[in-house]
Length: 254
Image 1: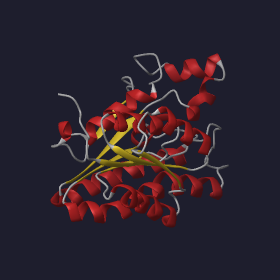
Image 2: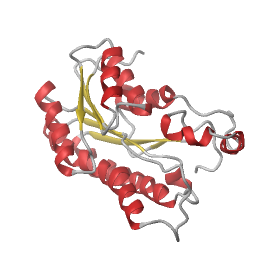
Image 3: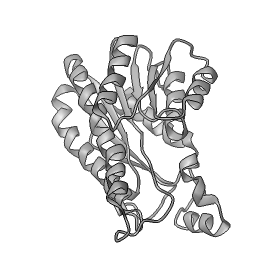
Image 4: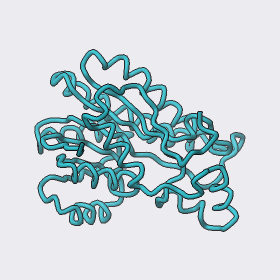
């Protein structure tokens, strides 16, 4: 069975690079119309649209989803361009490469992490859900992390933000089920993206990151995008409240 998203409209946050860009491509290839947000990477956003061969079916919106006004504007853009929002992928997030021991972690660092990784998920869901409720249909897929399940020493603010996302998904799946809105989460491990590039800067760091992964490699962005596509499709019509681990078999996620 081939995944077909014809006549579906998807909104994807953080869509200009990495997992987000791969998800934009996979959704468009399945026939969906796509609106994606980017924060700073305007050039990458433009390149993605040009390379997609889906002229007129992909739109980019510059938005900082930690700001409610920007999140509202993103959803409004999708409604204005395509008239509906069927799928929401909350992917935008940050991960700090430098270790941040709790006793040295600044309030600013903590607040920025929560604003982007957690509030940025709440904000777009907040504005998308009323339209899904009216249509009595919707799919929400949130990108979390194995760190949200097992924690991450020296990056505890990151783990806390991603753990909060998982709890949000669990609660919303029950809350929104009467409206036929399915809410699920994909939890990647290491993915070969710009965000994780610092981990590969030395052989020692890279080998340490690979050690707990049975497949002994980082995921490709496409290997995260395709499970997201699955959760957005009719193949997943009886799945809600689930955390789909996509991490090469890392044993520390539970």
